[in-house]
Each structure stands twice: as C-alpha cells, then as structure tokens.
Length: 292
Image (cartoon, rainbow, N blue to C red; front, top):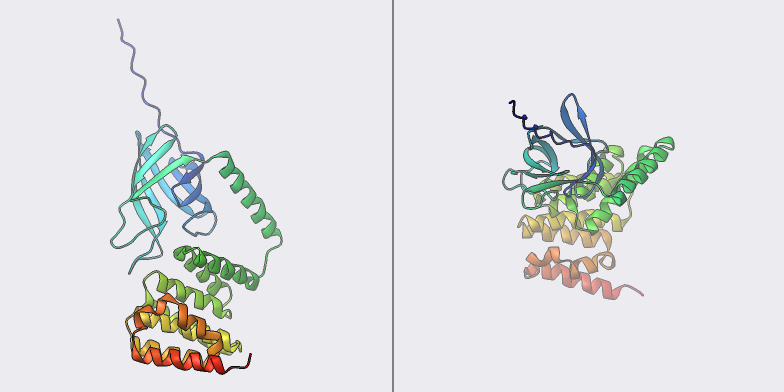
C-alpha cells in the first residue's frame, strides 16, 4: 500500500495593491521570479511615483528582501535601502527592519512593517490619483509651475509637522526652478526641524542671495535673515543669532518681525540673553512709533 504524499504548502503570493505600513500604497508583481513593489501613493515618505521600494522573494513562508525607506536623524541619508525579514500569514506579511542608529523612519511602527491587501477605498484612491496624473501628463506644467506646487506642498507638510516629506518637496522645488528662493528657504527650515541646523546655513545663504537677485520685498528678505538666526540658536551660537536678528529688524522693519521676536518658541533658548532683550526692546519701541 502506497501512502498519500503530503501536499506541499503553497508559496505565498504578493500581487496587486497593498498598504505597506506608513510607507504608502504599493503595487506588487512578480518579475523574473522576484517580488517587486512599486509605490503608487505615498504617506509619510515622499518618492517619485512608481519608485521601486520593495524587492525580494519567498523562501517557504518567509519573505527575504529589501525595502527603501525615508528616514531622519543626525547624519542619516534622507532615503536608504534596508534588508527586511518577514513572515507571511494569509494574505499579509509582517516584517522587521533594523535601522542604523540614530536613524528613524516614519514608515515603521517600532521597527515593524506590515503589508496588507488594500481596501476598496484605497484602490479607488490610487485609481483617482492615476487618472489625475494622466491628465496632468497631457497638460504638462512647466518647471516653474511644478516648483510652485512643490513649495506649496512643502509649506503644507511643515504645518502638519511632516518635516521629512516637506524636505523632499523643497528639494524638488530647488531642482525644478533655481530662481525660487522659497525652495532653498524651505529646505533650510526642514533641516533645522530635523536636527541638522549646521546643514541649513548654506541653504539660507542661497535663499538670501537668490531673493536679493530677484528683488524680493523687505519682509521676504527679513524672513531669510530670521530663519538663519533660528538655525544659529539651535546650534547654540547666541552671539551670532542675536546679530542676525538685529539685521532682520533692520532689513524688514520692526512691524514685520515683532511677532516672530515675541512669540516664536524657537527663540526661547536666548530669551534670557541681555543682547536679545535689547534687540526685542528696540523692536518694540520702533513698532509703537510706527503710524497706524
């Protein structure tokens, strides 16, 4: 009597649209025996559409591959490929990724990355975005218009405290239109917010140079001076920060900058400094003298 052979466990399949943690919605397919995932809609991380962000293969129920993540942290590259080890269960994959210290990624939940099939609503979202992208392709905007949109998106993301995606938007703006000082300024601001104030200085200097060449308004020039001062505060350079704040008042006028000097928490580390108090007092006096 010949016993029945036990059926081999089927190899898991990653195919179609999946939600991959906070990384976004990823379209999976199999290419030359390997699983390939291309980003269709981003969440916390900002990539060019259809960027390949997942590559790997199944060994039984274990997924072995690499994932491209955005990340923050001192000395950390904005994007990096990391090895991933995951386990398949039903249609989902639970994976673990070990980031280099001190890097962090908004796409991960305490080091884990969970793949699950997209909901009907998420599929509709991607379909709608693809249709909009198709229309935009037929009516392709010039680089200046695209840069303007990237700057607006970056400003919105900063307001939502999503600094890493905002930085990517401002990077795009700088590449699209080098005459837009706002792109350099926004990139500098995100570098400060992400803990890299020393890196921000060259972007604030570039923003100021471009703004001057473009004959920006005094208030706009003051904004570049002011943000450079905030970077110096974050670096612990009180003397340098106060000097740039004094120039900010001189360039922009007290009435344009008084709210920044009075209310911005970024200046809290120097509020007890005697020289800062003198700058604030002088600005308040000038503001009161201005005709209403």
